[in-house]
Image (spheres, rainbow over the protein chains, first blue to last red):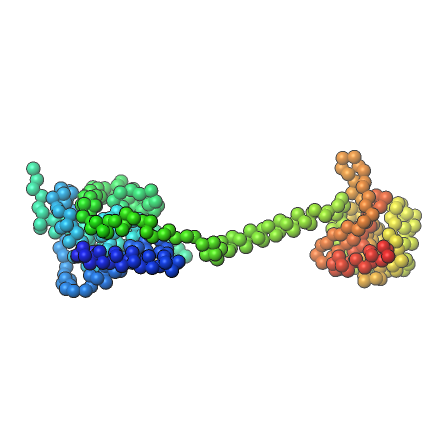
Length: 142
Length: 260
């Protein structure tokens, strides 16, 4: 989400430190979502520093039946970079959705958006990623 | 929140269908998935699910920094939230439930308490209290004498035996009297006295349904109904009730007078 492992590390470290401080004050984090919510805001704050990518409109493509095979050819870091380059809140939505750890309700609570918006963000993210896949990793069928 | 339930947009929900099925999935989401699987767009939905599964697999393969992984693995670093009793007790839902239970409990306890001190004939006595509350002096035959003197009248005129006024109330001056049959209580003698516009009732005691016997009691027992209180005593198979508008303490001085 931050585009850099060290930045993410700092954000998570600060989140854990904040949780420990709250616990010391006898005000522990209310739920597990608190960690993700806090870490997300810290990551967003960190990512807003330094050079910013220029906003542009990405091409979209229909989901291909061979997309799973295209994705298999990717390096995990390529996906991480692609997601971290997405604009907010799509970046967070895609990250949370593909972590496959949260329910819809939890994602909406974390992102503070409505179900329709989340659906739109994920759907457009899929089509943009497919377009990027088609451009960078065309399927070499047998 | 809207008063009206808005129908969820199932096609929109299906676009963010969970990659793996989880046990706590919302009903709306389950319906959306089911519709997508069986509908016209089953094939694109299948492609979407395969696409998502492939990306999720790749996401799991993204290397995580060892230090970060360690923080998340060591969950005991963060203590679990303790549900504090004070916080639970101050929850409006808990307060509302507690109040409702207290009211139900109070009503139940009142009813139990009310019937705990009941005696045979208490229901008749309460019914006659309602008669007392609705009686106007004009419906009674005017009669100015001592209440104690009416026993002979009841016996000679109405053949009502043992309709005796207890000594505590025998000296009270009467305004009028009547003998009537109620739907549920037969042979009721009603006397209106000057003192605090009190009313006396004499009526047959409740018989034991099993053997037809009557158990007298010489102590005073009380019944209450809609602001009226009656002190009841039972002798020789006849109940006597002194009734007035007020509470038990208003009748107490008359009952204690005899003891002295």
